Image 1 (cartoon, rainbow, N blue to C red):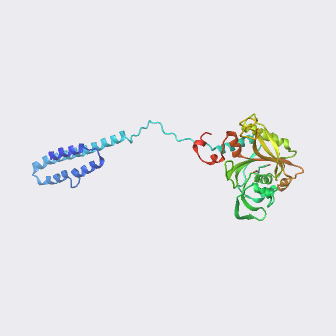
Image 2: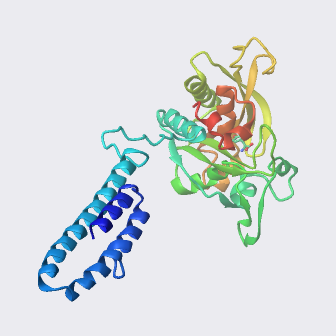
Image 3: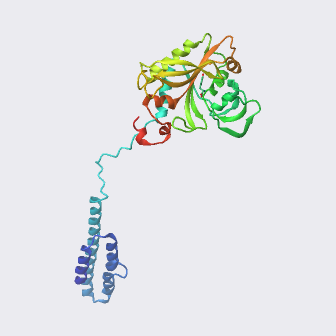
Length: 338
Ligand code: DAH
């Protein structure tokens, strides 16, 4: 029995492996274990021996059990000390903080600029009837001007009065909706929305954002338009910026203009990035009387101006971003700069 004890202790002390320790426990103390077998023999002994060997057996059993347990504890200690040791005083790992996408930031900034002078931000449907996107804006069916808006059509969905369904190709579709909503001027709308066109290159994406201003009241004239454009250019691009308006043609405005801002690179002197010191911002004009009528507003009493520009376009101009596709790439090395 003593020999068994010594042999067992030597083997147990040589390992800290949990599985091996389980096997050793079975080897000695299991149902068919070596010590168990010896203990089973005890009743066969005479009374005096039985007592003596019985006590010894208990001792050996306890010694084997305790050694196995302490080896297991040592193993656990070792495990904690090495790889899985948890130091509760260590500072936690900060999850990386994100921020609004560059386009969302620009939308917020543009909204704030116009809200300061009383524009009300609205949102209108991205999936729109032909009437609001074209016909109601003085662009009848088959009018060649429509080619400019390379439109996505939604199949098999047309309205007897409002015509085909389109993915709205510009925020101007909000003009008639706003006139219908407000009913009677004054109107001071800022409509910022997703627009869709079948184009994709360094300055066009099939989905992009526009912001559209519409002001209608008594006595609104071109100087109000020019003042608003100047205000926006100075607030958004910087105090030194100036704007100019050039004659242009749109079906829904008369007269129509294209708006330029002094070049951000050369400050108006003329360089490779601009056209003789000017950069094109987008379209604007005085709301066409047909459009006012279509919106239920009397063009003899009220006049208005409108403008519609690309959010990405002004953003790219402001930061000198060369390719619109960068904005939609999800590339964090680019986006984290802003
Ligand atoms: N809707 C035009 C476009 O997408 C831009 C535009 C031009 C909007 C003149 C206007 C405007 O409100 O008056 O190209």
